[in-house]
Amino acid sequence: MVTVFRLGGILYLVYTRDHRPPHVHVKPSPVRPEWELRIYLGKREDGSEDAYGRSLGDAEILSGKLKASKIEAYVEILVANLDQAWEIWDSIYGEDT
Image 1 (cartoon, rainbow, N blue to C red):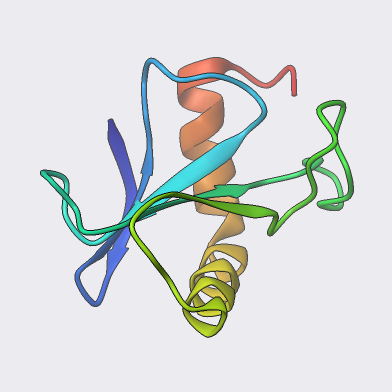
Image 2 (image 1 turned 90 degrees about the vertical axis):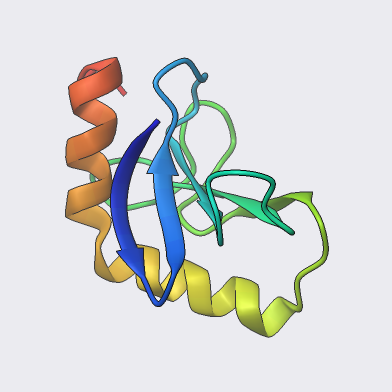
């Protein structure tokens, strides 16, 4: 896994052996986190729906529980750092998405 960035103890990660569509994992700890969230990046150009039907900010709770307001806050933080997320994604999976 590659850390995109860390903010307030929250990790934003791209896993090196993951899958498309482009997305970032968000969790409070790399080991046994109490929750984990997946946030999709959408189309590179404008964040609109990609070929997989995912738009920038679409999110899924993978484990644990999170309030909608927390999810929205994590999405906003990712959007503010979107170039960095795409840079990491591209370094792992290439620029064909």
